Image 1 (cartoon, helix red, strand yellow):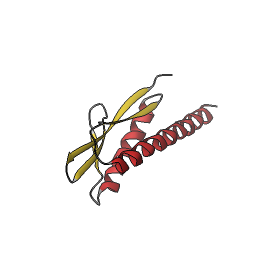
Image 2 (cartoon, rainbow, N blue to C red):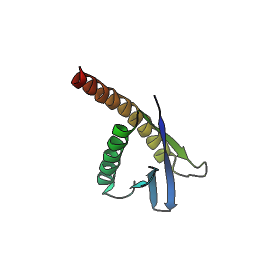
Image 3 (cartoon, rainbow, N blue to C red):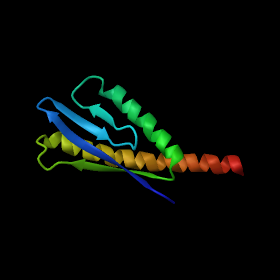
Image 4 (tube, rainbow, N blue to C red):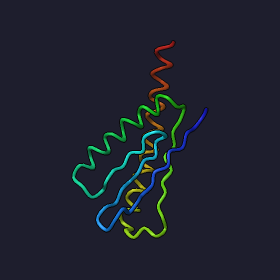
Length: 105
């Protein structure tokens, strides 16, 4: 089974802008954590993750944060969020595989 790693970076763009960047191969997607539209940006990330999952055997998100990053709370929350998202990706992949196997039986 092949596995693709997608790097996810927590970035401080400026004093008021923190971004969680999902580095998809051809289309990095940013979630600005400081704006009210971040839920919509997360939806775009979810759609892209599902598309990637359908095309790959497995996906692993790898969280990265520069040690100079100043906001410890964002770092802790984002790191835990990526761990949870990895668990959900694995569960979703198992459901996809089961459905495909049931359809082929």
